[in-house]
Length: 79
Image 1 (spheres, helix red, strand yellow):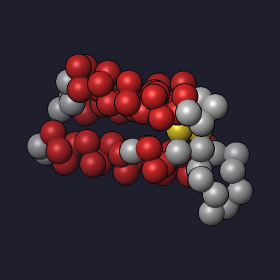
Image 2: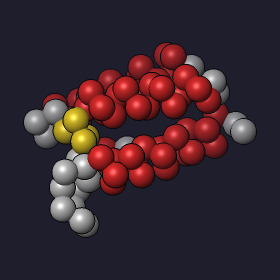
Image 3: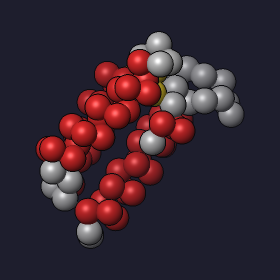
Image 4: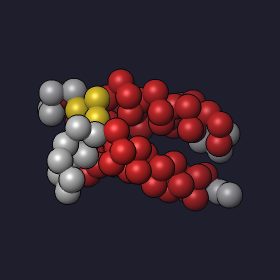
C-alpha cells in the first residue's frame, strides 16, 4: 500500500470512528473531541507504518487549527 492509500484507509477509519463515537444525533456533524481524534489517528498511523511521524504531526496540527474554531471538536469535513 502506498502512503496515499494508507492515508485514505486511515481517514476512512477515522470517519467511521467519528460516526460511532459522536454524541451528535444521527445525520449530524459527527463531532468528536480533538484529543480523541488525535489519539486514534496517531495510533492507526503508527500501526500502519507508511505515514511518517512528521506527516502525522503536520496533519494533526491542521486538524487542531480547525477544531479550535469549533470548541475543540473535530468534524468529518475537517479531513
